[in-house]
Amino acid sequence: MEIAGVPFKNPIIAASGTFGFGEEYHELYDVGCLGGISSKGLTLRPKDGNEGIRVWETASGMMNSVGLQNPGVEAFIEHGIAQMRRFGNVLIANMGGHSMEDYVTGASMLSEADIDMLELNISCPNVKSGGMAFGIKADVAREVVTAVRKVCSKPLIVKLSPNAENIVEMALACEEAGADALSLVNTFQAMAIDIRKRKPVFNNVYAGLSGAAIKPIALRMVHSVCKQVHVPVIGIGGICTAEDILEFVMAGAAAVQIGTVNFNNPMAGRDMLNDLSHLCQAEGIADINEIRGVC
Amino acid sequence: MRYFESEVIANQQITQDIFVVQVKRNGAEAAAGQFYMLKSWDTELTLMRPISIFKAEADSLHFMYRTVGRGTQRMARLKAGDPIRLLGPCGNGYPVAEIKGKVAVLGGGVGIPPLCETAKTLRNNGVEVDAFLGFRDVLFAVEEFEPHCANIFVSTEKGAEGYKGFITDLLKPENYDVVLTCGPEVMMRKVAAMCAETGTTCYCSLEHRMACGIGACLGCSIRTRSGMKRVCKDGPVFLSTDLMW
Image (cartoon, rainbow over all chains, first blue to last red; front, side, top):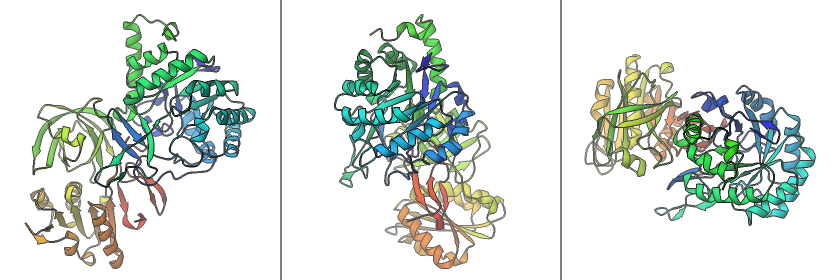
C-alpha cells in the first residue's frame, strides 16, 4: 500500500506523542515491523512542556497534557532522524506550532531533511496561545496549510483535531490548501476534577482525551471525512485491536495510527500486526484494499 | 527490559490497605530501587501501574502496594495462580555499587518498600545500614529490614508505636555518608534540606503518574537542575541536589 506516493509495508503507524522517536519501544521489539512511526510532536524551538500532572487515567481511556515537550526541529534533524532511520520504515516528522512563522520555518527545515513525510499538527489541545486555534477554524487551517505547502516538498499529512468546528469542512479546507493526506483524530478536549482538592487535575484545566473511549466518535469522523475528500485518510482514535483497524479501513481509512494502546500493551504494534494478518485470513480478505470504504 | 506474563505465587494483605504480591520471576532482572509496570487486567484499565521492587528472590519478585485507586484495588483481588503482566525492570535504582561507608535509608509509607531491597543489597556489599521508617499509624515491613540493618528506628504520627511524630525528627544526617530516601514529597524535601545542611549525599526516589513507564510518552517529566528528566527512565532515583523543589 502507499500513501501520497510513499510505500508502507503495512497500515499500522505509531502515533505521535505516544512512541517518542521509537527508541524506547525498540528495546522491546523491532519497531521496524510497523508501517511507520510518527515522531514525537516537534516545535521549531525546544519545549519543556507543561507543569503539573500530565497523564490521568479515565474510563476506557486517558487524558494527557504533556504540552509538546520536545527537543526542537534542529535537534531532531541532527540526532532524531538518524535514530529513526535505522528502523527502516516510513519516517514521519510530526510538527506543531504557535505561529504561522514557526510553522513555515519548521516545515521548510524539515522539508530539506531526510524524512519521508511531514505530519502537520494543527490540533494539539495542550498548548496555550494558538496551537488549538489552527485546528478549530477551517479558514485559519487553510491559511497555515497553504503557507506550509509552499515551502514543503515532502508529502504533507495534516493531522486534524476532533475539536474542529466542522471536521468535514476542516478536511476539505486542508485538502484544497494542498495536503497530500489527512490524519484524524487527535485528542478530544476534556476535563477532570480532583474532588478532594476541589481543583481541576490539570494546570491547563482542559486536556486531551484518548483511548478506546473515543473510538466510535473517531470512526464516525473518519467516515464522514472519507466520504468527502479525495486524499488518503489515516484513521486515529482509540484503536486497540485488529478488528478496530478493519473498522477504520471499512470506514475509508488508508492506514491507521495507534497511540494510547501502546501504554496498555507495550507490544501492541507487533501484536496487532500479527492479529491483523490472522483476522484478514479468517475473514477471507486477501487485500485490505478490497474492503476500504465499503461502509 | 522485558514485557512478559507471569503468575501470582501469593497476594498477602499486610494491613488494611497494604498488600504484597509475590510473582514468579522468570529470570527477570531487578536492581534495588527499580520498579516494574504491572497489570492484572486486559483492557478494562488503560494503564499499567508502576510499583517498586520490595524484595527480589531467586525465583520470585515481591511488590508491596497500597490500595489507592482502581488499579491497586484490582490487584488486591489477585490470588495464587492468577496471571499478571510485568514490564521492566524500569528506571535506574539507587547507585548501590558506588555507595560506601555508613548509610541511612529513610522511608515514609509506601515509600518504604523499595528501601528494603536496597538495604539488603547494601548490606551484601558490606555497607552498614540504619533504617528510619515512618508510618501514619500501623507498622508494616519492619521485620523485613531486620536482617539487613544495624539499627531500625520507627515512628507513627500519633505515637501508636515507636517515636511519636515524623521520622525525619530522628535522622542525624551528619552520622551518615549517604542518605537514601523514598516517600511523600514533603518528607523527602525535609530530608534533602537536612542533608544539604550537613553536606551529606542524599538520593531521593520519586513517585509520579506514568503512562508508558519506559521513557517514550513524557507523561512523568520533571524539571531538574540538569534539564527536563523522565522519572520513569532517568529516575526514579535522583540526587537531591539535582531536584528543584
